[in-house]
Length: 482
Image 1 (cartoon, one colour):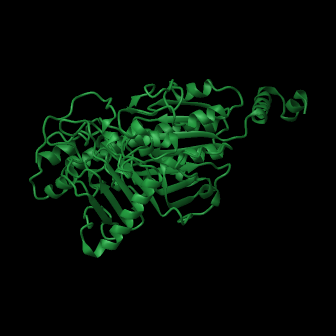
Image 2 (tube, one colour):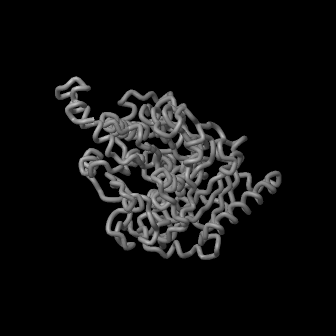
Image 3 (spheres, helix red, strand yellow):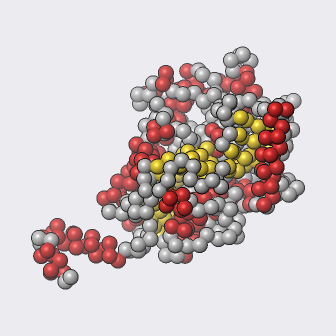
């Protein structure tokens, strides 16, 4: 159709010209999907209104879940920022990333990341706020952050996009990472009596108030993500954009972040792509956030590198099914090396690996002589907070002491939890003879998969993780209490 005929058909005038431009742009635009990954910092499942939380309001995540697919058993590779983000970018378990397995490290350039691969394939890539990190972007041989070029905002990123090219953007929110403004949640209208206090935390006004402040920051992340969706909707690009919302590790409370229990590793995950994926579904398969990189690559028409241990989610997304879709996804692995510089007189970490299954959680602590939360009295691997202070100040209170010991105390080499009887994961039954067969089966399965993925801890070479430089500054605690 000639331009004048198009304008005449549309009724003429400025509106017709605008419609013509939109149609021409659509005709020349790359048909491959855009990718918007909105990544929260310290957000954990099930803290979303669509997941049933009675206090928090997350309309954007609710929309993504309602119009797309919500995963209830999505897990990070590690409950710590740097290794979790490195695992997502590379599509590999963090224990395969050398220095990248630790917080405040670097990600060696030899490990390919999906933004680079998409850029090479013609995508416009970038990020704003927190990308990969914390750590050194360039010490491992890279010239920029592994998440791509930094931009001031999503709007600035879109303005810099060459015409007709698909994009891949990483929105790295710094919410709900601490610090919080005390009583910000309550003052916004949240009711303390409605808060569901996790089983691993004492039920006290201070804890409830602290949780509300965490909720308030989750809501800000949700609202800002919603603003990006509105921008794409106005441009007519939302439906062919793969929108992913998730979090990098657990909430910053005792026995949550930097731990392998669910409140440290079970991440919210919603994926919306109306152009190709049927919405209104809830999937119960176990998936890892390592699976996102091969998913993005496959959606863009690329073959994921063989080094990726993650498995593309495209089969699940395209299935149109809910519930348990892929019978092979009956478990997922997580792990931990060094979080902060928390052990007395050394930069060693607290190495752990876990296998999460439907009925059980099994954890192997490789160095049980060390302190899981860091040496007393600082317990540096637990973020400073009103909740942490309350538990430390009241550690001898009969109502607090059992929870304090679980969060702050030493742990045995093996932990086993029966999810059916103990959904809060508080009672370790690893030494119970009634669970001996289950413990052995899970232990053997965990070690077999760790060896298959070349985990140095499973190959007798795990001390290498303790030798990598810690780039977070400060000095180790001076001495430990027995």
